[in-house]
Image (cartoon, rainbow, N blue to C red; front, top):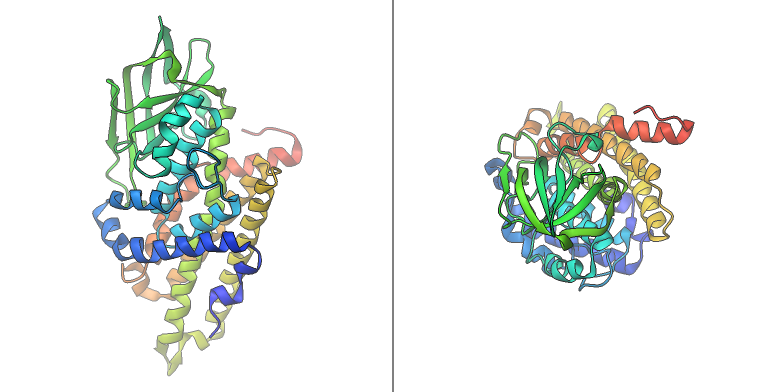
Amino acid sequence: MTTIDDLFDISTLVTPEEREWQLKAREFAQTKIKPIIERDFEDRRLPVELVPEVGAAGFFGMYMDGYGLAGASSVAYGLVAMEFEAVDSGFRTMLSVQGSLAMGAIHKFGSEEQKQTWLPGMGRGELIGCFGLTEPQGGSDPNTMITTARRDGDEWVINGKKRWIGLGTIANVAVIWAKDEEGVVRGFVVPTDTPGYKATAIENKLSMRASLQTEIELTDVRLPADAVMPGGQGLSAPFKCLNEARYGIAWGVMGAARNCLEVAVDRVTTRETFGEPIGAKQLVQGKLADCFVEYEKGLLLAHYLGTLKDAGKLHHNQISVGKLNNVREAIKIASTCRALLGGDGITSDYPVMRHMANLESVRTYEGTDEVHALVIGRALTGLAAF
């Protein structure tokens, strides 16, 4: 029987080095994450003990140069994200928060001292970072930001609240975005042991349960003048970081879709009804074929975005196409595969229902379907409808 990997052989599209990164990530995900993920999902626990191992393997910030980072291609990073999310979206989210958002912000906008202080340890997984942009009242509109930063002599004083911030309770450093007294958004590198920083885990999640999202309160947090990131001014700065994360999502969700499809194919070829495997039925094969076609199209789209990114030609409008399409289709694939599993599909005997729940969160964060549709609509018409 032809496997999904055989029917669409990604290895023919990527370099040997990129394929090596993919296979290394697959081995890590299958041997380290998969054996514990159902337990940790049930227990609402991020397997933080694996973070140093992720760093030791070189996965954090792997597409960045310098500071002990791997300098791999964007396609290689996408393949790693896909293999991680094939096991669990929450664990891929951890990779993204650390490597694309927190490290990405410091790498893009930080001073040389900030980069030297934080990036090597974060790359090794010895230091953990978080990215504080979203606020309780803001959601998709970060321009409503109410977190403030004011000058007091040689110091900055930050007050405000952030919500849905990955890794906030275990982070050593937080990249916090706040408006100064002139209304300009600025990025700050905030050691989390600074007085006034408080992070509280959001516990009542029905999705992304094997990951860590938090609410951060900032109460008269005093920082030295050099805590501000020199290049991090204006909303375009955090948006550039979000685009890095959105790019990884376009790849990652195809991993979740692939895993759902693999499980469904195995099940329909082994479960018999009316005297033969249900996979011998036309309706079942038609559903599987539809799922596979959308998976293949999504993976081709992700790869195309990766080649554009490596060539320095990727535009944020194109990232919105990838995020909108691939998340939407991954959810449809997961739902179809869940149905093919019948009643057993809602149990933890299979990962499909967990993928379905997680993908609903992925659909919401880093830009909802509606936001990305409006980004694409604006690009097509030249008219903003936000």
